[in-house]
Image (tube, rainbow, N blue to C red; front, side, top):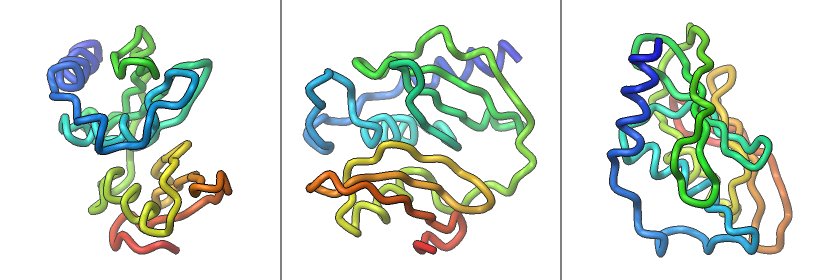
Amino acid sequence: MKTIATAIIATVLGGAILSAQAFAATPDNGHLPPTYIVYKLVQDGVQLRKLETEHDVYEAWVDAGDGTLVKVGIDPHNAELTADFNDSRNNNHQSPAVDAAQAVQTVAATGHWDVREIGLKNGAWQVKAADDAGQMEKFRVDAQSGQIR
């Protein structure tokens, strides 16, 4: 399992970081926005399945490519991996046709740019996001069609 986690770490660390101009400004606490993290992971070829914030660190569940989900920790200030990468579990679900970045774009089209959490559950991306006024909403984006349910 450590070999899979090591490969994922190398993939994430080896990828180019997207231009910060393409995303919302870094909040006052210095954390990179979740949207930035989602796009970076997808650009790096990582099959993201869930992203949330726990204890001042982003926790991401990613598909290791063999049906195993691996949890990686990501520092919210610099998008670097942390030591939180040693948890795994089986993934018995169909791979989504719509990736996390596409789900974020679908939600952003509704005016809700500030993504707080995203995760794949029961064939849909569960996205929690706020609009410019700070109004938080939860969205379900079908993982096969890309449509909001």
